[in-house]
Length: 629
Image (cartoon, helix red, strand yellow):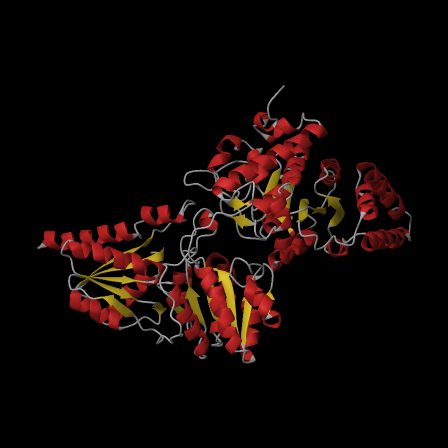
């Protein structure tokens, strides 16, 4: 039969009739499809290329969706999507209305658990396994976790409980950075595969029962023999840690050898209790540019397949401006210390890490630790800047409250990806930070209107030393304004009027300020006089805003944040607290839903927070008032 094998794979059951050589051909076809689609749509390339054989072997050995397969984070799940009935839709990856870039429960029965944030698979898998045990079901539960995700404490919390409860759970550790398996080789792989084989395990079980049955001394003899076995495993493999957590360790296995993977997974399938299969893979496997620079091609935009050149829009991004500014400020202030959680590239701190290596820490996927680590630095007089994406800072909410704000420690939070981020979807949109931060005492919360103001706010945050301060800015390129040569200290809590007007006030913050200004200019042509205020600070909020609203009588608040508890809510609270009742205020923001994936500008337009949406709301409010009169 001619044509691609991939075109005949409509479900995992179609894999089971393939020969090993056909599976190897299929792996190559899957890589070609992933590279082609990601080059057009963008996405997580390197991780998914490295996990192709894992996906094939897992689905070849196990029986999904009856057996439950959980992909941690989801960065590496593209091959899984291709072989679970979504091949014909794969070209719609990360497009509006198309398939998600991450596992999603309502997209496919093969997506056991929705992922997108790291290190959740083991905990979720243990929950599923526990539920199955209570229901008397014998299906297998498999959690596939990348080694980066193993830097998070949550992964070890899950491992600890899984080992303690001795529930059936198979954890596949995809060690795609060789961080654990550098110094191990063929002997440990051979040994591990043999001592977990079905024949060996049958003999071992019978021997265990026989020895333990010896009156008086059986238990003691077995303990001695078991310790000897564990010592051999610890000496010849890197599995000591997992054995200590009461996991049966298998590995390390070459993650691109399908025969080895199938053998190891089959062995694991027949073991009882918690099992960890250690697999090492090459990130970016099959595409040379991604193999040579996996970090660059981790989350990537559209690119040219032949050259590997990534297609970028002109102009500097907010991330780049932040990175340049903190380096410049750190040259003048030796107290500045930069911290990120496994995102030095994504947060713009690569240059800082090279110029000031002793004042930089990448703590791994451990946002909680990053915040408390920063708090400790602040107690000793340093000025830590914690650069984390908005969606990931949510994971450290408790530490922000108790370890930073309660103690009034001047930690600076550089919150990248505030607002809509686009194609990565609901797990990555930063749409809640204004709401979850402003309820905390002692913290200053602000958002710049453009890249120039970002520089000034970062300078301001590091100049004041009384309170923690959070600066929230969007993904992507800046507005394109000219950058001031000198830094300015912005008065804390002070808004600025950027356009005078008498008919209505637009109170905007962050990325919505310039669209509000452009909307006001359009409305001016129609004879509508609009006052535009760059409010800048959500907390403390400028009380002068209330008098502007009182004088004009009508106002629109605009924010790229959930409408609930955000900037608009802060304005309403301010008006209420100041006893201002006789005004009309309309809030524009994101609705009380999880925003879907799609192009960022498209989503802003859909939810009415772009220029046209603001114009529409202004007119609606003005005409509503006229109709009443």
